[in-house]
Image (cartoon, rainbow, N blue to C red; front, top):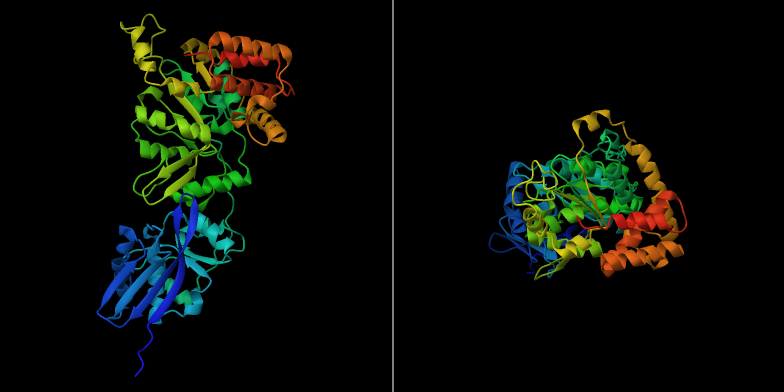
Length: 498
């Protein structure tokens, strides 16, 4: 008598490496043997616990697992896998193998979702990344109902099955009670944040902020408490150029992996991240048990603002040196290497000393100037050298603030910044902050001034390069093809130590 062939089902899911969704085939086999539920294929603990969530969800629907040997294989077997989003494909594979769902119903569908004990499908991270990969493979995607809008961004023609529960999904796949089609998502109007019009006076600070925005330059502001450093930084995203379609998609993929996409909407403006100074190195640059993106990656194509700069742990500040230069982060683990984009604009603010009033004779502490030397020494020379612009923010008197005229709005400044940025993209295809200065055209007297000043100021090769980039951005704001002498002079004034 021939043996009964075991039931076998296959459904695709994904695991994540950085912002890439890697296909994983979930194979479920139900065969004779002692009752067991085994998951193999390098599953992390959250996946190993899926069997209990699946068992409870089926029980809540009045279904019971057969008293047989249930084997779940996640292939490729040598690829590490983690995340509770494997609950849904495992449950679907079991239901197909049991004959509850026809196999052809899931042939061209991939699935992600975490299952609650009552069968509800909970949201998971990385839906947008999975939708893009599923679309590239000409597959549809099964996802939680609350993330259907996010999945629809993967492609206009992508088949999205957004289900609130496992029971509703079974009814849809059996064609007994189809789920409604997920409508195309409607783009949200961009949020430009606080307006620069609120900043009164502070003409030099506004000028530096505009230069930083036009060329995507890093900026370090120093000044006494309450002088407006944080206020200025929070208004920088509002004057940055709009993101391109490619930048929107790349930035949104990072936020999808981090579970930070707002109500399924894409990130349509440069992000603004401002971690507290007690943050850890993995939280800042990425890492942890799941190699999640850090603040530098969540600020990709946007602004990373570090207030109280010297108060950050030394290892955090030194950890910024590599991504500031390369624009990416590599998180190395024994099993794999994870890469995240991290092309962010670093904006930092600090007090000139611990008390903050070293330049105020009436309020400065009795340890001046030693307190300032010790405080600024917390920032290493190589880190300071990576700051394109350095400026001191002076406090305004109450009388000066009340009588100062209202400045330009963010929209007016953003229009000038956009024109300067467009010139850079036309000329070189990238912003000035990442370009080598060899292609910049300097007039003879401007180049002579820059070389002589760099020699007197003992600027490093990196410092000279960044000064040339700033001068080129100032020229772009003026709309000139060549860098002139006054452009170089202004750029040099922002390379002076604080």
